[in-house]
Image (cartoon, rainbow, N blue to C red; front, side, top):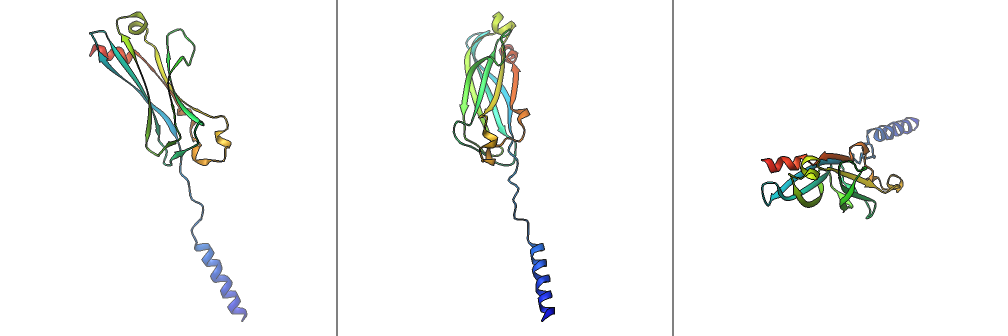
Length: 166
C-alpha cells in the first residue's frame, strides 16, 4: 500500500512537471514614427500643392488596442526660427493598430519653391505619437508601447523643393 502511494505521488509529480507553462507571452507592441513622405501636384514650374504624409507603424508582433482619447498622432509644420514643435497641421485619433499595420496623417498646402519661405528656407515637418499620461497604469497591457524613443520623426521640407526640380 505504501508503494502504491509513493508511485501515485511520483506519477502526479511527473505529470505536473510535464505540463506546459500556462503563461502566454502577449508579444511586443511597438508603435514607430516610420516616415514622412512628400508629394506634389504642379500648377507651374515652381508652384503647386504639396502633400505631407506621416506614417506610424506597429513594428511589434502584438496588436495595439486601446480606448478612445488615450492616444493621438500629431503632424507639425515648423518654420525656420520658430520654436518646436511648430504649428499643428494634422491629427489622427485612433484606438487600434494591428501588428505590422500602419496609420497615416496628411496635410496639403500651396507651395512655391521659388519663394524664400519655402524654396530657400523650407519648414520642417514632424510626426509624433502622444499618449494619455496614465496609459501605462490603466490596466490594459494591450496599449503599452515598448519603445517610446521611436515615436517622433522630423524631416526637412527641402524634399518638396527637390520634387519641383525633377
